[in-house]
Image 1 (cartoon, rainbow, N blue to C red):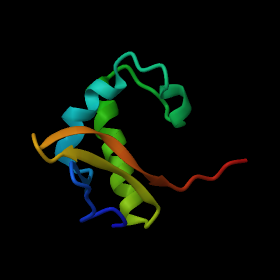
Image 2 (cartoon, helix red, strand yellow):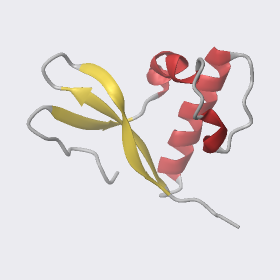
Image 3 (cartoon, rainbow, N blue to C red):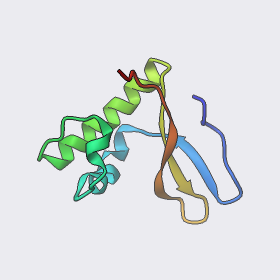
Image 4 (cartoon, rainbow, N blue to C red):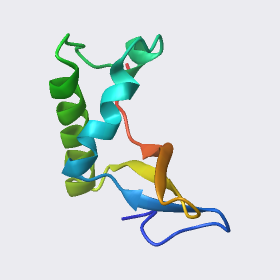
Length: 90
């Protein structure tokens, strides 16, 4: 994958994994930017997070890039996501 193995002095970038769905749940709570993701939003937050992770994994499989987790090297904590994605836009 395009970001795998890349890191900075303070950060490392890792592919998103199925186990990351719990972390993503907070992303889907009261986030006013969700309307721009092009997702069909559902009220079941844990399911929404699992579907989002699954969508990223599908992007990886199809060589369409995808988002990666940003990990703080000092704490080994997930602090966000970054990446390239391909989209079809009318």
